[in-house]
Image (tube, rainbow, N blue to C red; front, side, top):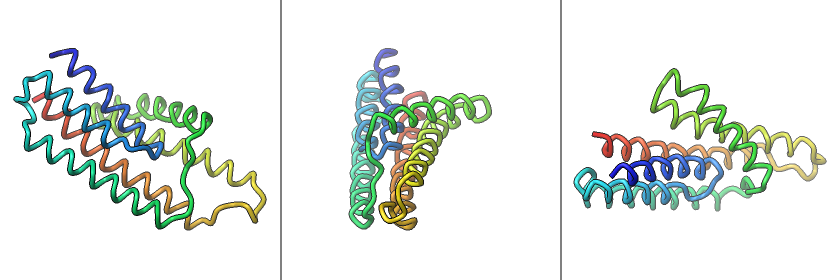
Amino acid sequence: MEFAVTVAIILSFLGIFAAALGLPGSFIIFLAAVIGDLGGGFQRLGFKALLLLFMVALLAEIIGFLMEMRGNFRFLLTKQNCFFALLGACLGFYLLTPFLWGLGALLGIFGGAFLALLFWEMRKQMKMKPSLRTTAGSFLWAALTVALKGVFAITMTATVLINIYS
């Protein structure tokens, strides 16, 4: 049981980090919920809660997809972006966890990775010629898309961890 809960926690944090990068982190969090509930013999969450989490994950990805289709800019997944997002996630985790405990860990991972990715992309945009830069509205729309997926990811992770631990 402890192994399943440990894997569920690690996968939940990985799902939040993936959501900050614009990847489908909500499905990773759903997988974490299944593994965490499997360790408890499907007693803690149950079938209905898992079905609801799957539907929320699907809704988050559909909304994210539709928002990405409306905008014409998307944060690319490069080694530099991943490095700075990981650095930001570690810094956010380190800074917010002592003050907000569990919620601080979740917010720190997403917020740190998201802000680091945002500042790194802004820096790359400022180095480009003005005619090659993306518009401010398109850039903000991409940031809003990632932020919305992050809200879904943090909510799902908090729900999973509260139900696994209670």
